[in-house]
Length: 398
Length: 81
Image (cartoon, rainbow over all chains, first blue to last red; front, side, top):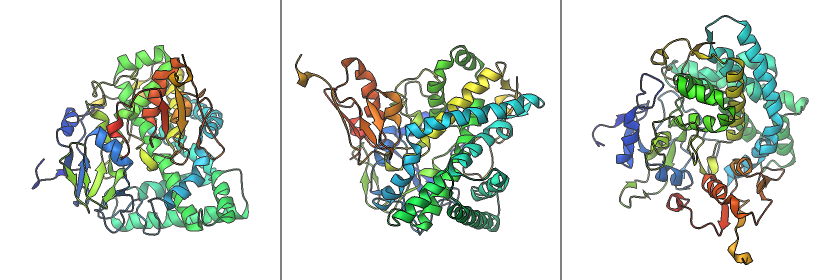
């Protein structure tokens, strides 16, 4: 670590669907000075135990707007000065939403997901080879699922996706276009929620409207719209990216793919391991602001008050926590990875994402026993200037 | 064996954030109410579940699971302050 030369973040990826070896040695220093895509400074917490602990530390505030470094010069992403992301307000709002994400509710959706998966695979099978996995399967699946859950009409899907993609641009679109997407997306949500107010359905937005009407102290109209905005985005891009890139990581290893096909009961642990590998994301989503000095577990390193902090997803490669971290081991047990975070901001959609990833992975391998990458893994390309780093196109044959 | 030798499970419903990890791992021990918050179905689970209980406790994102009789969490120093 050098104080005069912060490391550019996100860290560079390996050319193939592998984790760069250097990630396992990030933990030599508990804190790494980094430069965000905006050029502004932040501190990356590198060790699993520190990261896990700090996810639960209220001295790291999620209210970053206007005081923490910005992720990019043109994009505040989820920063909203009108939303309080810290307890107690955050917990009140979250509890309204989480009833829709309980294990029972997610399992009730599993049959819906199976049907959507089968229909998408039918279309993919009927089309030409190689197929492009992201467009044919990985993008549409989570969009259809989250739209079903929230009650977004199917005809709105293309518009919704265009706006989200623009909204999530960190540097690939000009600032005014990002801003325009952000405003259009917000306006679209206003219309959508108004239509649900007029004509409630059997969906999460209608449920939230009802709760907000009964007890506005739990959820104001603005907070409701903010949650819908966040759930729609989070329910779509992250799962799509993990599904596609996870499959690429798997298919790049034919021997592991064969092992999984031979025993599909390994799908849940394989999905966990691909989540740990987390080749689609960065730690930018963990942006926090230190409201006090915070000492790390080594007893000497301190995060100074006023710092912008990222809790590293790269700590999924901490050799202190994960034996042989660079090996993709689909039988790994005690796989308490931090891809969904921890603490009170633990990913609201984690159980939904897991279920979708399990259904999608198993169905792909059953339907296409010969599924393989149609280009060498080294040739897969990551997007430039996006919030997520999953492969943009994944050509596959079977 | 007396009662105090066995395992005793409790969970903090206030800090639960509905990750559902415990419910998927040990559905015979954990459930959720209509709001999605943790419920303990079996406060005195059999000894054969020790390993899975340890994993459930460790995996809980808000450290909301307590299991008496299981020994300390190996990762306790990584827990919430």
